Every structure is written in structure tokens, then in C-alpha cells.
Length: 433
Image 1 (cartoon, rainbow, N blue to C red):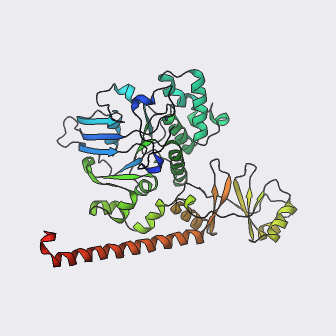
Image 2: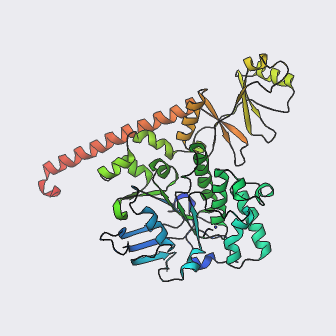
Image 3: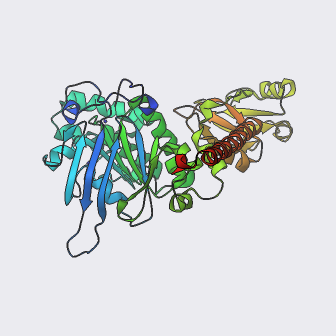
């Protein structure tokens, strides 16, 4: 079952992760729980009647407050490894420590109430409202009614859903993306230090998936949970992971490193196969829209008088305006020629805005949106979809050129290091022995 919020920062943990919490500290009544470290020691799962274990002697350590992504081939044991952390699958042997506490022999139901869990297709109970789904674990752990009510509203707001609008809806009344947001809210509701996510965005369309990934990144900036995320999509792993575990069959670790290190220095041919072609361009997934210059653009509102819009276009520095709806969200791109054909009405004028990006979107997301739109720019939106600026093609291409230049300099530096090593070995043959 699902559950979570966050806190302070430890200097060596990614994204300002907290120093770490134990499971005991996630109990109701305390402040927001920070992330907790996870240690897996010689973890093995062997199913009866099989000669080869599904997970074979895996040991790894995840820092408090970081996002670690498991990626590997289908059937390789990723999900089995994830489910052993909250003991939805019991390990055959090995130990599990969370926040330094050995949970291998803890009551599994009590353990799961203190670990958030989000899965593909949200896993919401169809007979319960959104509010009842989110309240489920806090209610089971004994929270008061007033605290549960406040927490449910807080969680909906946190994932960008208006409590007044969504609290009483049923899952069937939500879009796929909205269901996944509610699933994450439910997983965070009881404020656990650890959040496990098993292909949580795999069942939605690519555009919704991008936005959900951005939302998770934004949430992690606020909450600093320890997130373990399973995916088969290496681009998704690069985008959201502080570190990535590339797994072979039986969950054998091929490489456990940062996205940058895996892209620039894959451990072997197996890892290189996951990286695939275009490693330099994949690095666009490592830079966020917030890291580049976000420009401004002339805007008007749907409520502005037609004459005022004409004047704004005539006197503007561009031949295009961005029309915002009554909530300040991007609605239409208007060109001068559109207004000439408007004939007193904007109903049929302009081009609807199909693609936007958030500040937490990657430069790859922004580049794809710009190329899809074919107009050289994309609108940037805030938490509730409100307009905050634009990113244009020139800014994106400058970033690409900078990355390619960095890669070229890194390659030259690496070649020089190899040359220096060879020269040193020629001078002192025993040094290389």
C-alpha cells in the first residue's frame, strides 16, 4: 500500500537530501519525514522448482534522499528486487536495512505502511473516491480525522490537483495522468521516508508521461524522499535519477553510477547497449529548462478587447502574441495575419497551444516541443499550468553546442591521460605491472 513529505539537507546527498530518517521517525505525530538510507546485503530470491535464482546475491547502498533508478532487460528481476525492499516478495536470504534499521524480520504489514508504493496504472481502488484513496494509509495508521482531512487536501495540492474539484471524484472520472498523480499522492500521504515506484508512468501517453516525470522531479525538490524507481526506459532513468543501477539478468549489477558517468563512460558493452546511439544528445536529459535563460513573450488575455489585441500586435517586437486563458494558461498563438481574418471574432483565429514545458522539464523535452511546433519556441508553465515565459530554439541550440564542446574537450583530455600513462610505462615498465 502507498504513502509521504520532507526536510533538511545533507551536503553530500543529491538534490539537498536530508541526513536520513529511520522508519520509527516516520510514525504519525512527528514532523515531515526526510529520506532514509537503504542497504541491501547479499539479497537473493529463489523460487521453488527453479534452478536459477530470480535475484542473485545483490548488495547495494542507496543514500538518504536520493533518487535511484533500476533499469535492465525485461524479466531480469528489477521488480522482484524492488518488491523485496518492502517485502511484498520475501527474500530467500540476505538482509534489508532502512535508515540503519534491519527490517528483514519486521512485521511486513507494519513495514509497508511506512514505505510509499506507486505502481503502473495507479492501483487506485475504483469503489473509493480520490479522498478516500489518499486517506487509506493514514487512517490505517491511526491518524485523527482532522489530520487526515488536512493531509489529503495538502497532498492533492502538492501534485497539482485542486482539492475542491477532485476530492469527491472516483478514479473512473479521472484521466490517466490524473490517476497517476493521485497514486503518487496516496503513496506520499502517510509521510514515509522511502517511496518505491514500479513503472509508474508506463501506461500513459508520451506527453503526459513527460509532465508526470517533471512533476516527480519537482516533488523531490520539495520533499527529499529516498526514491527507488523501476523502468525499462533508459531515457527516463537519465532524466529522473541521481544515480542509475543498470541490471543484468538475475539483477546482477552491471554499473551503478550517475547518469553523466554512465553516458560518458559505460562500464562494458552491455551498458553501452542501454545507452545506445547519440550519448551526447541524451545529455540533454541532464539539463533542466530552469538552468537556461527563460525569455519573455508578448501576451494578451482572452478577455482583452479585440482592438487592444490589434494594437499589441502592431506595436510589438514580434509578429506573434501568446493569448492566455482566464487562468493565465497558454491558449493560442496569434499572428498578425490571423487577426486580419478574425472579422471581429477571435473564435477561429490563431493556433491552439498543444505543447508546453515546465521549469523541471529537460532540454530534450523542450527541443522536441519546439521541433513539433515548428515555430522556434515553446511556452514554459508553472505548477498549475500558468504561463511563466518561453524557451526558444537559439537558446536550446547554444546549450547543445556547449555540451558537444564539453564532450570534445573531455575526449581530448582522456586521450591525453592515456598518452601520459603509456609514456610513463615506457619510462618505467615496472610501474604498469
